[in-house]
Length: 109
Image 1 (tube, rainbow, N blue to C red):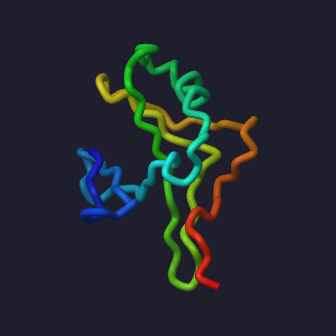
Image 2 (cartoon, rainbow, N blue to C red; image 1 turned 90 degrees about the horizontal axis):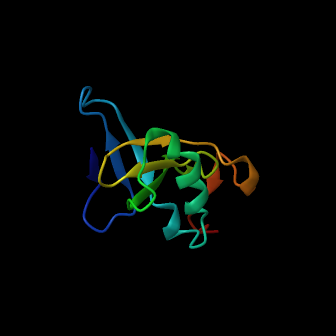
């Protein structure tokens, strides 16, 4: 299930229903990269039986290290989840040039 971190936060939790103590910090990549290749995510995740017209939720998993290191996100391997079927997959988008540890927040330096 997808749980808001707190009202207004960019962070959410993708939490296991079977193991509630297992959760990943996720963000919507479109918040930081408006032209993120959603169509490629849909194509790569089509093997789970997504309807071509089904609204797709795209998320990327974050790593939030101790301060002062900035959080990073895995823009290379997004999650594509069908909003109607709730089927999804993590896929790898080699051809995009994105990495698995991209800094996405502005630096305070």
